[in-house]
Image 1 (cartoon, helix red, strand yellow):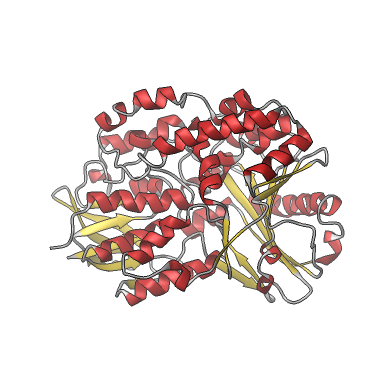
Image 2: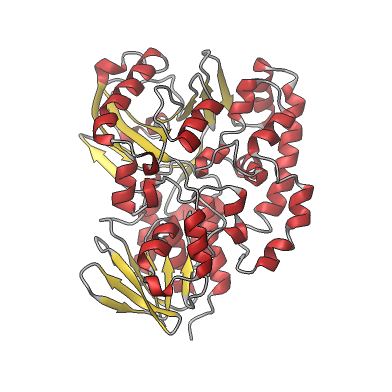
Length: 489
């Protein structure tokens, strides 16, 4: 039996490997020149950059993929723990190193607000209770029937998942800086902490239980190892190839049509394309079920991303591997991004310095960086050709004045991606960085289903389907379809 996988992000890679292990002949298709989706690699003038995800928080999900074929992840990739996990730099100049042992984290909290140490312990305990339900029990469970959602309501109510992440954190912590630090996790999966259900508070315990890791050679090295595994197992790759539409006959997916008109037949089709793009553009209009049309019409999308990649002709030894650079506003800035849809003059940033762990990312005596800035998605109508140079200049000036002194004089080989690039390169609806937003009414059964509504033999993995965005989320989405798709006969 033949299976087609559309898109080779982490969700598509995992789906292809799981289908191959079930006996399918698998072909994986991607419009990009390499596998990995957003996890591609850029090289400029001797500087290397992971384009997308840089944090590995659930390595066991990757280990499972190699174990399917009797192999070990550590035979192909070296994962190293990062310490601190994140360094927060607040607008008042205060820093907070998050990660390491529990005692080290408590010592850092005590430097800012000693009374919040007990609150953090309580927050972590609450996060574990959410994790035990939201991740351990539900992340790989299909939510294709409303009854499955209803059965979870009592447990979710006991866990107070009607709260937002901000409300949950604020119940436990009093210092405004620590509240910011411990509520940013939804932003890692495209959500506003003031809107996102507190079920995403499980990320605290996930990090504590399994650590924060970096793959030596970068996320690109991890993708290369997964591609090699795919090729060893006979999975065919068709790159630089775009799928135009799904072939649907008698209510079932029977294959795909490529941009050049070529038709490929299949017994099973798995889409790792953006879920909103799939339902709005790839499924022929006459075959779009009412349920998916309603979800698409009411969809709220994640923020957009502006990502500036650059090298420096010097080394910033005091800058951590992961830095969260907080601007002067928090809630108000998120309102601008998610609700008012305006590009503000201020910002908060995530700065990635892989050379802190792996010097091979830059020439000797240099550093490699990328800085990610949450911005409104394309629904804001921003003219990025005009605004990108201005935003770049403001970001460089802000970093120059704070944690990267002298940056203006040493920056080199810089280039950027905007939401327009996400829309073009990955067919992401409205250039959203993480597909639809992780609000409650777009979670579990309310999200686009892993088994497509009303269409047999069509399955979804990736950020826009259950359980959601982030590397652990999309890897779990492949586990969901693994449970839904029968073994090849």
